[in-house]
Amino acid sequence: MRVNRKFNQVVVEGVNLKYKREPDQEMVQRIKVLKREAPIHVSNVSLIDPSLGIPTRVRTGYLEDGTKVRVSKKSGSVIPKPDRSELTYFARTKDLKPGPNDTKPELVMKKTYAGEDFLRVFNDFEKYLEDKAALEAKLVFKEDDTHRRKL
Image (cartoon, rainbow, N blue to C red; front, side, top):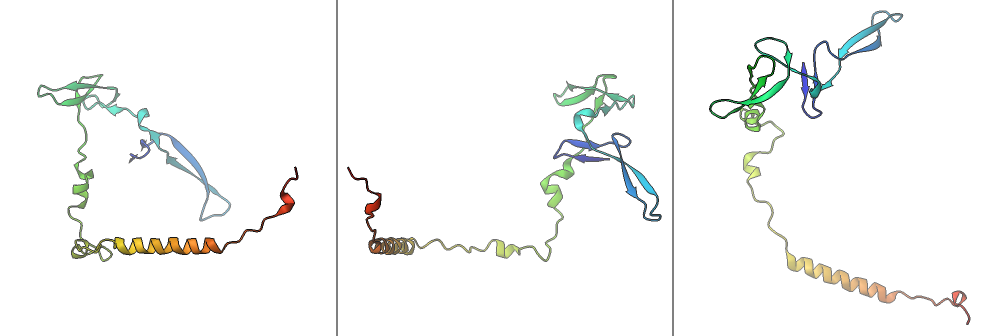
Protein backbone atom coordinates (compact mmCIF):
# COMPACT_ATOMS: atom_id res chain seq x y z
CA MET A 1 0.00 0.00 0.00
CA ARG A 2 2.78 2.49 0.93
CA VAL A 3 6.59 2.58 0.95
CA ASN A 4 8.69 4.62 3.41
CA ARG A 5 12.17 4.63 1.88
CA LYS A 6 13.65 6.74 4.68
CA PHE A 7 13.05 4.04 7.30
CA ASN A 8 13.07 1.01 4.92
CA GLN A 9 9.48 0.18 5.80
CA VAL A 10 6.43 -0.89 3.80
CA VAL A 11 2.73 -1.14 4.61
CA VAL A 12 1.17 -4.37 3.31
CA GLU A 13 -2.59 -4.84 3.11
CA GLY A 14 -3.87 -7.26 5.75
CA VAL A 15 -0.49 -7.65 7.50
CA ASN A 16 0.56 -6.30 10.92
CA LEU A 17 -2.92 -5.10 11.85
CA LYS A 18 -3.14 -2.78 14.84
CA TYR A 19 -6.42 -2.25 16.66
CA LYS A 20 -7.27 1.18 17.99
CA ARG A 21 -10.20 1.97 20.26
CA GLU A 22 -11.85 5.26 19.50
CA PRO A 23 -15.03 6.87 20.83
CA ASP A 24 -17.87 6.83 18.33
CA GLN A 25 -18.94 10.24 17.04
CA GLU A 26 -22.62 9.31 16.73
CA MET A 27 -23.21 7.66 20.09
CA VAL A 28 -21.12 8.63 23.11
CA GLN A 29 -21.79 5.32 24.90
CA ARG A 30 -20.23 3.13 22.18
CA ILE A 31 -16.55 2.69 21.33
CA LYS A 32 -15.38 1.85 17.81
CA VAL A 33 -12.48 -0.50 17.17
CA LEU A 34 -10.50 0.48 14.09
CA LYS A 35 -8.14 -1.89 12.24
CA ARG A 36 -5.14 -0.30 10.58
CA GLU A 37 -2.09 -1.74 8.89
CA ALA A 38 1.19 -0.77 10.53
CA PRO A 39 4.54 -0.62 8.70
CA ILE A 40 6.94 -3.57 8.67
CA HIS A 41 10.58 -3.71 7.66
CA VAL A 42 11.36 -4.52 4.01
CA SER A 43 13.46 -7.50 5.04
CA ASN A 44 10.25 -9.21 6.19
CA VAL A 45 8.63 -8.90 2.76
CA SER A 46 9.08 -11.36 -0.13
CA LEU A 47 8.74 -10.70 -3.82
CA ILE A 48 5.98 -12.45 -5.78
CA ASP A 49 7.03 -14.97 -8.42
CA PRO A 50 5.54 -13.66 -11.70
CA SER A 51 4.85 -17.13 -13.14
CA LEU A 52 3.50 -18.87 -10.01
CA GLY A 53 1.99 -15.88 -8.17
CA ILE A 54 3.39 -16.96 -4.77
CA PRO A 55 6.10 -15.42 -2.53
CA THR A 56 9.63 -16.53 -3.36
CA ARG A 57 13.23 -15.88 -2.47
CA VAL A 58 15.42 -14.13 -4.99
CA ARG A 59 18.89 -14.78 -6.38
CA THR A 60 20.85 -12.72 -8.87
CA GLY A 61 21.56 -13.84 -12.37
CA TYR A 62 22.96 -12.45 -15.60
CA LEU A 63 21.43 -12.33 -19.07
CA GLU A 64 23.35 -13.06 -22.28
CA ASP A 65 24.13 -9.37 -22.77
CA GLY A 66 25.63 -9.18 -19.24
CA THR A 67 22.87 -7.25 -17.46
CA LYS A 68 22.22 -8.20 -13.85
CA VAL A 69 18.64 -9.36 -13.09
CA ARG A 70 16.62 -10.81 -10.19
CA VAL A 71 15.69 -14.47 -10.62
CA SER A 72 13.04 -16.41 -8.67
CA LYS A 73 14.43 -19.40 -6.76
CA LYS A 74 11.20 -21.41 -7.14
CA SER A 75 10.59 -21.16 -10.87
CA GLY A 76 13.74 -19.52 -12.25
CA SER A 77 11.79 -16.75 -13.97
CA VAL A 78 13.15 -13.20 -14.16
CA ILE A 79 11.52 -10.67 -11.79
CA PRO A 80 11.73 -7.23 -13.44
CA LYS A 81 12.48 -4.13 -11.40
CA PRO A 82 9.84 -1.37 -11.45
CA ASP A 83 10.43 1.78 -13.49
CA ARG A 84 11.59 4.52 -11.13
CA SER A 85 12.48 7.15 -13.73
CA GLU A 86 9.75 9.45 -12.41
CA LEU A 87 11.66 9.75 -9.12
CA THR A 88 14.67 11.52 -10.65
CA TYR A 89 15.16 15.21 -9.95
CA PHE A 90 14.83 16.15 -13.62
CA ALA A 91 11.55 14.23 -14.04
CA ARG A 92 10.09 15.87 -10.94
CA THR A 93 11.05 19.41 -11.96
CA LYS A 94 10.83 19.52 -15.77
CA ASP A 95 7.21 20.81 -15.94
CA LEU A 96 7.42 23.03 -12.86
CA LYS A 97 6.14 26.57 -13.34
CA PRO A 98 7.54 29.39 -11.16
CA GLY A 99 5.11 30.48 -8.47
CA PRO A 100 4.48 33.88 -6.92
CA ASN A 101 6.93 33.23 -4.06
CA ASP A 102 9.79 32.06 -6.32
CA THR A 103 12.76 34.30 -7.09
CA LYS A 104 12.75 35.67 -10.63
CA PRO A 105 15.47 34.19 -12.92
CA GLU A 106 16.91 37.61 -13.77
CA LEU A 107 17.36 38.35 -10.04
CA VAL A 108 19.04 35.01 -9.45
CA MET A 109 21.77 35.74 -12.00
CA LYS A 110 22.33 39.33 -10.77
CA LYS A 111 25.70 39.84 -9.06
CA THR A 112 25.07 41.45 -5.67
CA TYR A 113 28.32 40.82 -3.78
CA ALA A 114 30.92 43.49 -4.55
CA GLY A 115 33.64 42.12 -2.31
CA GLU A 116 34.99 43.20 1.06
CA ASP A 117 36.96 46.40 1.66
CA PHE A 118 39.91 44.85 3.46
CA LEU A 119 41.65 48.18 4.11
CA ARG A 120 38.59 49.44 6.03
CA VAL A 121 38.38 46.17 7.99
CA PHE A 122 42.10 46.41 8.87
CA ASN A 123 41.74 50.03 10.02
CA ASP A 124 38.67 49.16 12.13
CA PHE A 125 40.60 46.32 13.77
CA GLU A 126 43.58 48.57 14.55
CA LYS A 127 41.22 51.15 16.09
CA TYR A 128 39.64 48.40 18.20
CA LEU A 129 43.08 47.31 19.46
CA GLU A 130 44.03 50.93 20.32
CA ASP A 131 40.76 51.43 22.23
CA LYS A 132 41.30 48.17 24.09
CA ALA A 133 44.86 49.15 25.04
CA ALA A 134 43.64 52.57 26.26
CA LEU A 135 40.97 50.96 28.44
CA GLU A 136 43.43 48.44 29.87
CA ALA A 137 45.84 51.31 30.77
CA LYS A 138 43.10 52.94 32.86
CA LEU A 139 42.62 49.82 34.98
CA VAL A 140 44.07 50.10 38.49
CA PHE A 141 44.62 47.10 40.70
CA LYS A 142 44.93 47.60 44.45
CA GLU A 143 47.38 45.38 46.17
CA ASP A 144 45.72 43.56 49.01
CA ASP A 145 48.02 42.80 51.96
CA THR A 146 45.51 40.67 53.85
CA HIS A 147 46.02 37.68 51.62
CA ARG A 148 49.81 37.70 51.76
CA ARG A 149 51.50 35.22 54.00
CA LYS A 150 54.06 36.38 56.45
CA LEU A 151 57.23 34.41 56.42
